[in-house]
Image (tube, rainbow, N blue to C red; front, side):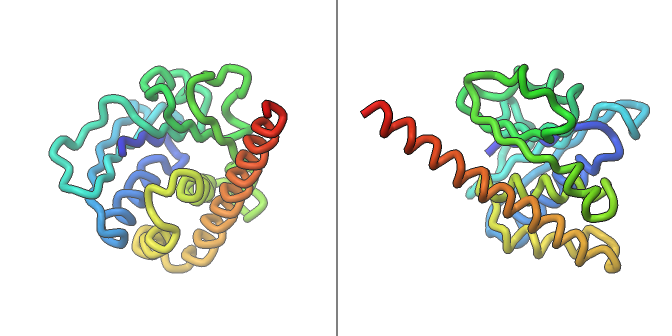
Length: 192
């Protein structure tokens, strides 16, 4: 699975890639690689983390065309959306990426990750909210593996709030999937 997390420096995009790769390779019995890119200004500039997760050893660590694009800024969406394969999955931050521009040939799921993080006390947790959402929607890694990956990646005093942020995003994702499934059933019933 080729995955790109994207946004701007300071949102924890690179940390998101590290967490997903760590969860997959250390706690989910999969193989994972991660590469990263960011502008010279780092904080505030465009950045991305490219992750490859597979059940067999990864022979080429770079993504060519992501199957999943997670984007947490408008600039990142505009820069990377054309790379997403048709039929791919697009995950966005509701408040930071304009929905009227979304491609019609991909599955789109959105979450107000920054707003949820602010409700938890600090927008710095938005990336972990998004990781929870990513975990629920894509099922690339298990929620148990993601939760095991968090403690070694954040200071010990922030573990509980990061787990809570993950859970909020994960539960939001489960609700989105439930709503999407109900919507498809309604459409099928109308068509019949």
